[in-house]
Image (cartoon, rainbow, N blue to C red; front, side):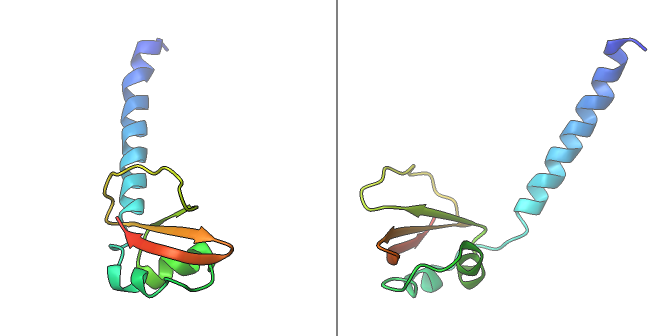
Length: 92
């Protein structure tokens, strides 16, 4: 079978797979700012617990002074952690 005839079905399957992956990632809700604020000055919890508590789909852990991107993602919880304690927690 010529390679050209396999390219289109392969591209269609790849696109379908990426689309279903994107849908799975969007299944979680938005990060709750109120829930994020309640984490400040608390001990660091497992990432899955932080996701459950805030509704976030993504948790970004940083240290004080770490550079971070400034893009907004309503599904992301960003936590600044030092010595096992959450110093700052924000959504976006």
